[in-house]
Image (cartoon, each protein chain N blue to C red):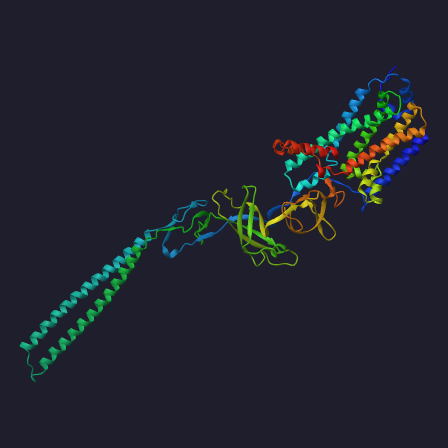
Length: 220
Length: 411
């Protein structure tokens, strides 16, 4: 019986895979796939940064530094973003997995497998934002998948805008996936599962918002 | 389950569509960054506004050589059509035969007169002798007639007539002498006129020789070229004499400078209501030793400098966006924001536009204003790997590089 983690199949066909994940004793290929997804995340962040998405803070340098220095800063930004992508991949896989693992007696590998279905959704969102930024100028804060645009209409509060901008339909999808799998694996009441899932995600969103809200270029 | 998926998918699409509408509508409150990869720096250049015309290279001057038949009989031309000549080249010569004949005739006349003058001189001598003899005879042995008076009377009468004769002869002698002098002058004049050939006064090329000896018998064109052309009526109000001109042609490299020296005040043909009048002009070219020779008769493009601005702030023409009333440029300013600026346009030359007001030298402007997503919004651009230099990394120091990476990480 092939128990390999089939990322895309698990992502699109919950019913089939939830049972499969619950009933199998071993989940081979988790580490390999984890590594691959983390690398993919780093790569996508790197590509996005290559186009300069998110590097608006550097643009004011255009008038003050030499062209070579300006390009160097952009390259360093790209390196930083690639590292962020790897970090993001690791955090998004391990943090919720560890959190769920501490709240249950299920193998960590199975929890990691759940996050492996989550990760492609996050990467997809990041990929889709590249053409939107380049062609329509819609960067993260004005992503049409998130509440960011509406937030800019209703409030002037920068933090609120950033927080709502992190909440996107992809994030809802993630909550849905995690809820579905955990419900099957943990065999607890759906309400508690939902609270667990939402709380960990809310925590991540808050951190993400804080990250983009704080202008580190001014602090460092 | 399928129904549920459809509902969710529809909701998602609606949500995204609504967001897109809110973000992309004209006065959207959502911040949109512009992806800008091409920009230009406001330059400082001298711009010239020129007026195009066409012209043809012609020799600067034509010299005509006239032949005067009185000077002597024509013998032969010493140059051919197309010959290069300088100012001392003899162009043609007169026949000298006729002159010799004339001279011989004059010499003969003169010697005749000289002989005449000698004859008169002899006659005068004889008369003087006669006079002296008659005076002495009248004193010593005067013939005595009946009344004793008539004898002395007749000798007095003789003396008077001899005296008169001498006077007449002397008068004739001076007349002949004057005649001889005149012939001497004529002969001298012939000797002095050594003009058996006619030399050119200018350097140039023999353009035409009239072998039928109809004046002008030789036409010489100078080596210095000039340019001739015509202006239309519209051109006329923009040009004036003394303007700088540039000549271009496929036949020589670069441009040749010149000055508009003459604009005709009358059109080249009789004015007519139907046709547009055309006014001939002339251009004097600058002499440049290094310049390829400009072949006469070739057609050239003429650029008349009708307006010039030195050290103008210039932007590429593409970067200027024309509004209903004003023109705008988009400055990528030091705040990292795309700034819209109203400008006052000046001269245009090629793809450069002079900005009289609204841009300073060194400012960065967008090359393609259509790429702007939103005015007064940030912009970002792609990494240009080719422009990276190792040197900048070395100069920066590890600390700063780490700092930049950290900032990139936290974004």
